[in-house]
Length: 431
Image 1 (cartoon, rainbow, N blue to C red):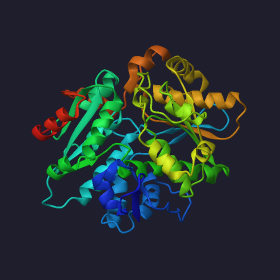
Image 2: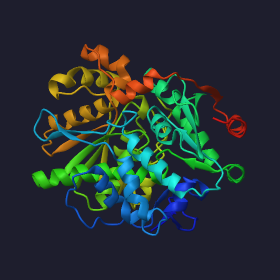
Image 3: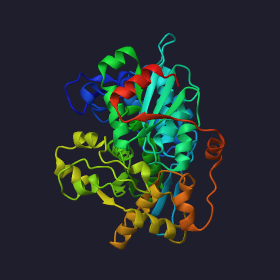
Image 4: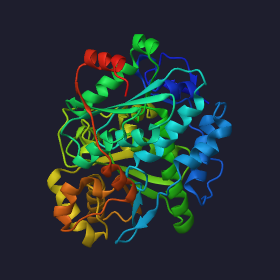
């Protein structure tokens, strides 16, 4: 299968080259030239088996085709349980059971396995660049830590992630280096995009991307949507809708990929925080990037969602796109109220990001919506103990893998939000 750029102008390319490049020539994002269909919609017992079925059509002709099952088995070695909530038809899709307690673990591990499989024995070291608003960086660090042939540079906005998130970015050492950027997430993301589009830099230094702009992050995330939807449809004979806490839009785009491949995915609702570029657009305003606002759901503090470019590519016009999605904004006061009420109302303790999804669900139910919905639980609440514990009135124990991360020492370097400084840092530092 070939992949093309959202901005056109680039020749179609195979999955292997697209994975290695990360960003298409000219700054566009890679998308499938056509969307393949799943040939078997029967639910599979293991998530890794569903992942292989979802990803196999995209890897037709790839050097990784015969290794795909093994890569999926390693990346999807922990489940994504669909947990019933209190309330008729309400569910939580728990995606926080991986090594860094966030949904990004699945795709980061897949990407690391795929890029490792594409390396030649004499290839130079590849620098994986990642901008993170909280959870992506830790997942990428865990996935690439100790892998020969790779170094990882994590850019995160200083003071705009939770203390435990920051520790999870800084506790790796070895071939992983975290950088505290004096700026917001959009500044970090702009630096990474500029580097990946810099042909002169890439001629001197092999680079790879690990944000959701990478196909290696986007496509694997479709697996858990297909898995949950197929099992739910087999049990209930209905399509399951998903409420996706949304920042950079990669996770929501993955739900759309699963649906367009034929998985019985129902409606998709975007739950945003106070960064309201998407709610404004889906309410009818012209799309416009907006300055980032710091919120309790910090991993969603994105004013210019990169993957909006993919959504626009997949729809003929704004009317068609708005007809297929909706988006709701949830401010910090609503997040606090939802976390406080969630144990009694839903039977769970949510992280601030998951709380935006629960609030979006509550609004649907109040408005009389009776369709089955699953809120996507993107991270474990223990990563945000400073927010969550005072609201629920008790400690939230971190899962074992997160506790192990927190027990290690942490270190980071400072970085100005300046491209010349980033260039000098990349070319002189050796994480």
